[in-house]
Image 1 (cartoon, helix red, strand yellow):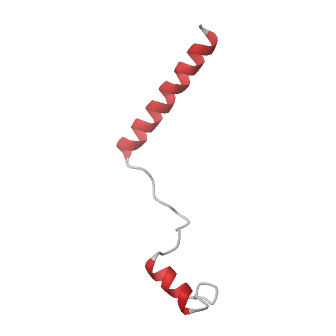
Image 2 (cartoon, one colour):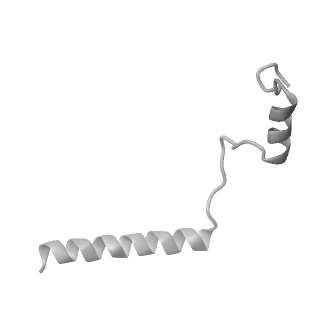
Image 3 (cartoon, helix red, strand yellow):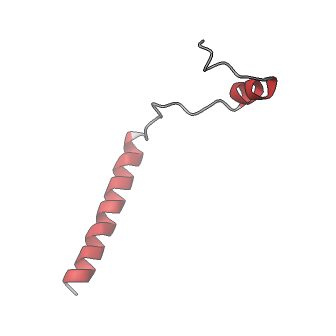
Length: 55
């Protein structure tokens, strides 16, 4: 552990131990959630385009 990663007091150590800190890599959504979100956003986008141009 480098000096930059070490907490400078007990309060910060407790926060990092209990709450943690965000990872730079971050997780991703499961595949069914991705499919649902992409299809719902895509359908909304197409409905808006349809309402604007083909009304």
